[in-house]
Image (cartoon, rainbow over all chains, first blue to last red; front, side, top):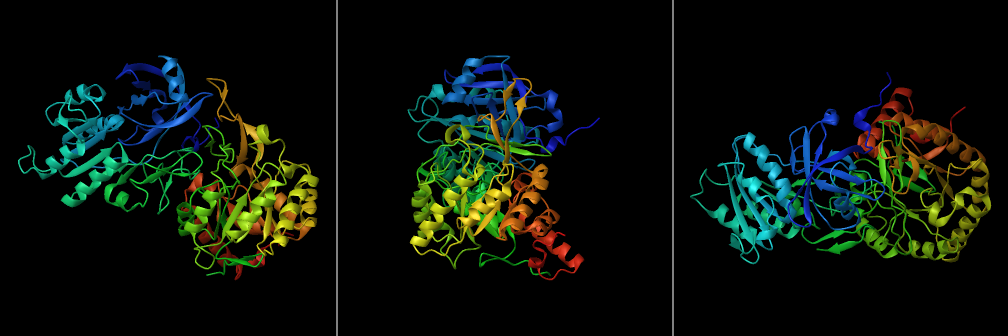
Length: 283
Length: 311
């Protein structure tokens, strides 16, 4: 039988939504069964997929969980495509391309500080799940405006004793009152942390927060990684829409996960991004 | 080591490989990165006078044999282009020649756009009259009709002469015509200095079988990739033979041998775009090395010797 090279096929694979879990009124987790496409290989934490709502639009989303049989996407309702997605319900069919991009890399036995802002909690949960399998210890620091917007708290706590959950809220309704970066700073400074000092920092969330995380890790002399988010069209390194100044790296290919120290050298990191027509927009 | 340098309308390129318009051409940093990876020159994404939105996603995808896209010429307009040129560098300080691709909805609008573009001193101006992905909004491309193609060429030529610019004007032609030689001849008569050919083929359409929805949001899109090379080679040869003007031969070039073939057909420069999907951006340097390898094997000392040598 004649068969095309699957690796060069970037057409969407159609998957039904297996299950929907409501995190908040406007943030839902969509669970997909992709055992049918196992030949694609399962994803690594930090990678993303392009989610196609047939006939509407297609957008990139970080993977929140992937066990090789099913994967999760935690999605906020913010625009045409996601509004349509929220109306579709379980069993509805959508298209998936990917997984694409780089991933969070750690070593066995690392003591990881995972700094998550807003939806960033979802991909950080993915890191935590995988890190625990490698004997790592995890400090999960999630920030949000208020307690009701803190994501993934129960799931993270269910991961067991090697994960410590730290919350930070702007209004003080849960955990530390203030920025989650302040919690990170404290943890990095502490010499009595259970499991020894933090050996690596990963951040996912608002760029200003990630910049601060990379700076704090740098000051401490430990490695860090951040997740670059830029407007994307193709997701496969061709269109040039997500290129960053001034080295020209592509967020979809050399990123999204990018070394923190290297990110600090990107002139636009923490300052501006580009819209759908390529115009600079300040954060 | 063979000499891979070529001269196109008196502009010198370190090697004949130029990044084709629409790929990795949104920012100066990206263009510089392509040069760093081995391209001899780069082309901007097509520049409009005013902002132009383009299509929603999906805008592109590939298979082993072909690539389909309908980005729809998204661009922020001339002010962004001014920024890009500023960041890429002034002539003399550029890492490689910069080709400005320009596009407009009306023939008359090309005059004002050309006038603004000249002030940015691109090394070459490429007049894009052949995008097949905006027909719903703009009608059949100018490049599909000899009179209209010639008219746009004339409008730009007149403006260039009026402002005393010597920047070469290249017209990007469409393969979606019964006789590309006729179109090329009409543009040559109207004052084109050279050509870029071919733009994407079609448009084509791909349908997702499960949902029965066309994959591209625009439903149809231009075809590129490995499958289109024979058509590109043939059309480049037609244009070169008919007009004797230099051609940027573009379409389906994936390897050094593909590039050599394009040059034998008559191309002076070789446009490379979709290759990035198949080999990634490092492919530029690899293709240049493969061309050198071929030259050494064949005893070709100067790559320019092979232009148009098809028997």
